[in-house]
Image (cartoon, rainbow over all chains, first blue to last red; front, side):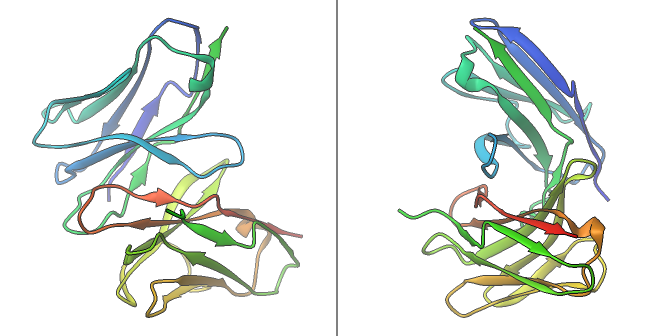
Length: 113
Length: 112
């Protein structure tokens, strides 16, 4: 089955700096890669996603890049703010009409004011 | 638009008991998936239901089961509870015309 590795497990950045979280996946059939943000006491919230026919996607301060050949994808957050502090999860799915996701173990991001 | 609603939010059960958790998806969403979240194993897929049929199942023992009703609401049941079943159980729903899940806030199950 699919295996998703995520690193780093913790990341501290100064407010205004950029943060990068990286994930690798094992199943070449995976074609859907979402990123989720989870705040304390809440369920994960989808922040951005990308399909395998796209190399990069941007949404304001957040961007995701995908390298299918190397089987890795990354989340980039620019101009970080204290409210970006949370746990971030990457995931992969082979789709086919179903969203059975395999998640990475998460990255705890702390943005220091 | 109401989000995914999970009830109850917190639950304490004794080893050997069984438990039923409930999930109401976003209106119009017909797919409901369940995940278990623990500090050690992270987020793990339990099962997915679509139009009252189980479409996928994760690698969990048969003590974990679920169902979906005609109004898309879903329940999951865990029988003969073990201490290791203590976890946050998350339900997520998805729409056929848009990528991605919307998760509920989860049910925190503690087995003592």
